[in-house]
Amino acid sequence: MFAVWGVVVTCLVTLHSAGVSGVQLVVPAFAAVAVLALLLWLNLRARKQWLRALSHDATLLANMVGRRAGLHLGTELYTEELRPLSKLVRVERKKLLVLGLTDPLCDIGNRRALEHWLHRLYSQPETRTPVSVLLIDLDRFKEVNDQYGHHVGDEVIKRFVAELKRRIRECDLIARMGGDEFCVVFPQTRLSVALALATRLRVQLPVTIQISNGVYQSISWTGGLSVTSPLDMDHTQVLKRADLALLEAKKQGRNQTKIYDSANPVEPAGTSKSVLH
Image 1 (cartoon, rainbow, N blue to C red):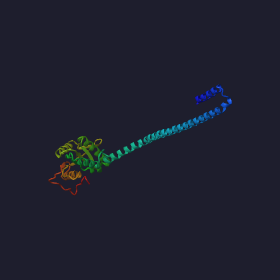
Image 2: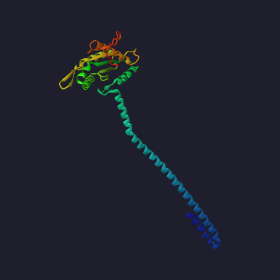
Image 3: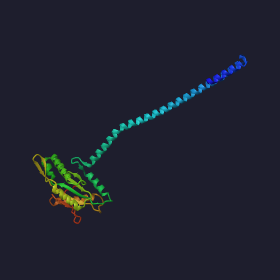
Image 4: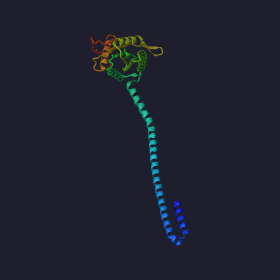
């Protein structure tokens, strides 16, 4: 713009030097000034609008960046607030699962866990390996509760289970059916091997358990042993056979282990108590 002004002034001075009178130069000079003023005004207006548009765009961009940053920060805060709650929910779910499948007195599986284990073992058609089951019933345990109280009876059960856990294989499973009744599951174990394992338990498990200083309680158990069959409809049938074998062992005097005899099945005696009821 200043260069244009310089050109106009130079032209006027040149014309005046060439003999053109000042009166003759007034109209062109005013016309030139008017044009230059108009150009200057238009230039300033355009620059002002450009600056305004640029400022508007910058404001929009800043707002967008700000909202995005705020949203990201809000998401982080939301996640941080929920993380402890999510962890708590996971812990509580795990607790409920453990409590739902664990016997609180003995810290072993309960009957629900036993059903779950057997169902999983039974539902593996690719292996179809035999699973043996040993039901255990402590003999005349009611006398312990009647003589010493249930708190002593609970202690005897806990110590018996502790001894049992130390003498089974790592792959074997123990569940408490209720009261003084237990079940040992021998996965992928033929009946002959399971019988040998049950016999070893009978030899190794203690016959007396200390219930207080200097006070010992004799303890014995009766067992019923069975194995899964390809003809089983579901996992409950092996339990029923083991229960029948247990009832037969009780009928014959207790303190022994009987195998279910498929060739000569027994019917529950009227005075015998099934561990499945």
